[in-house]
Length: 257
Image (tube, rainbow, N blue to C red):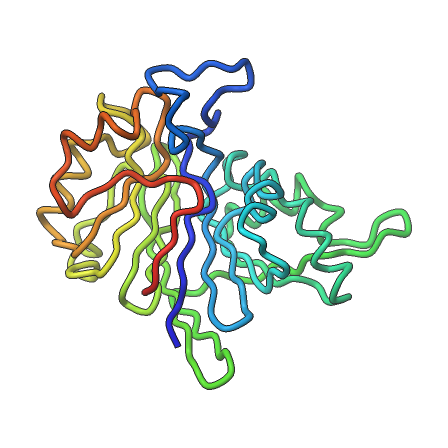
């Protein structure tokens, strides 16, 4: 059975349009330029594994008609990846089972400090989530299938973030400005590489277009999809600068891995 990977949101931290309606260089007449904050979904059979709970997660899951979330893997502690966490409560109410979430120690500490009520019974409200250690490799049995999720620590400015590799076929990293050399060889010849490409110009915490294209030369994925796109990257215009096997993401884009 094939695994479906869905890019729920592919926008930068303020989304497109911004809350004040500003589109930057993005043409509002092109639907792919409407971008919510980054989250992704791994689906196999009736199991859904979420990567990050962006502030737009409710809108994203409604749009994709997702009825259940079984586990959540976090990339890092920033608000645009975590602050939709309260929306996960609905899935606890449906199953009456805590949802397992996985995060590195820094993100775990941030979540437990800022969203304490999600993990500990508070004022008569039950805890809805259970936090777990993020291992180097997680093997998840889904009926007769094994889903392997491998985590790699990458640099994201002055903090770390996580790159996830799924079944040795697809890698997803929404926030990164450096992948360590020792890990690059483990990312060669992927079927899909979904990667941060914030803008054209240099940024100290994110890949820009030039740095993404350089990484692609080294690891040679069959197809690269650019995510975490800021409002200076118009969906149609950037296509003019991309090789045939590289494309910008759009909200709801999905593929089989």
